[in-house]
Length: 80
Image (cartoon, rainbow, N blue to C red; front, side, top):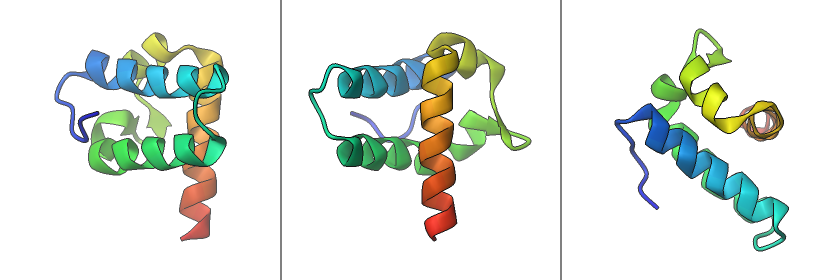
């Protein structure tokens, strides 16, 4: 898993794979949070435009995955 992505589609696919792996019960929620936060921290400008997720990325992810990722990011940024 790379940390920095230049292509929005590859970035979205990586996030999608992480959430799907969690849904398949192959990783724990904590491990999913950790992986999502690593990618979001390294690619925050590409993922979030004006405090909402980029439409290119959101379209690849789908509504449910966007909700999960936003929930993880909001909970982790409030903790800091």
